[in-house]
Every structure is written in C-alpha cells, then in structure tokens.
Image (cartoon, rainbow, N blue to C red; front, side):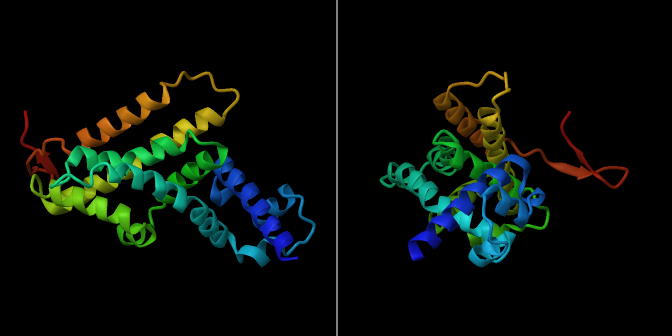
Length: 225
C-alpha cells in the first residue's frame, strides 16, 4: 500500500509539473491535475499535497538536490582560489540553470515554473534567501561583497537580484522553445548558450555605475552626455 501511494504521489507530481510548466502554475487547478493524471479519487491530490502550494513545494524539493549537485561541481573547481574570482563565482551561480534545461522535460518544466514564481511581485529577497540552499546563498554573498567594493551595497544587491531573475527567464524561454514541436527558432549550441549567458551576467553585474542627480522634474537625471 505504501509503495502504491508513493507511485501515485510521484505520478501526480509528474503531471502537475508538466501542466505548470506548460500553462503556468496559476492557471492549473487541483481538479485538472487529478483528471490529467487519470486519478479517480477526488481527494487524491489534496491527500498527498494539501493544496497547490504544497505541490509546488514538492516539485521544488524534487529538483533542489539535482541543481545543488550541478552547482557543487562548479563551485569545487574554484575552492582553491583565494580570494575566489568574481567571474568564476558568477559562473557557479548562473551556469547550473543553463545546464539543467538540457537534461530533460522534467528539468525544463521546473525552470519554467521557477521563472513564473520569481515574477511574483510579492516575493522578497528575504524569501528567496530563505528558500535557497546555503551554498547558493554563500556564492551570492561573495558576489555581493565583491561588487560592494565597486558600487553602493544596495545597488550591488539590486543587480544580483535583477541578473539572477533575468537569467532564469532566459533559460525558461529556451526551455519553452525546446519543448515546442512547432517552434522554428534556431538555437545556439548548449555550451555556447551557457557560456554566453554567464558572460552577459558578468557584464551586467560589473557595468559602470553612472552617477545621477535630481532632475528638474523631481526624477533622477543622468550626468552622462
């Protein structure tokens, strides 16, 4: 009975994951998941997950370990650096998602879901930090400390948040193209895509900071020409 229950739970997760990735978490009901899974028990989804947030948490846990393993392998290559170089820290932060979408439809579905979750205007940096593993938080902190020597600390934090969110969305868009049988958009090779994503992230994080002064209309106006 326990084994059958585990199989049902995993099948429901498989179905929910693909539905969420294809049409969006907010557009999928518990009933749709149950019917798509061919589950006759009307209370099956609630029994295993409680509610839709419970399903999302379960999907997140399913992928957390695999993503962490990718990042750990990248981070291990820079453990001997003292201090650890910014470009290699950014690589360890950004590249895992680019690799992840090459591994299969389940992994691509999660990156699409993650992009949607990060778009929620109610989500805060504190929430992201709380839900992230210690390794990712540590790498992000090292990047922030490096950037804070070049710009105000609050601006450094804003850049990390913006770049992290943007790169997840770029990966999610690539995942959508790969999963769309009707797509005719040409894609760069996976290795080239990942490296270019890291290069763009590093460039955005370290872009020159242009001083601003109050404009005549009360808004900030650039001092640049």
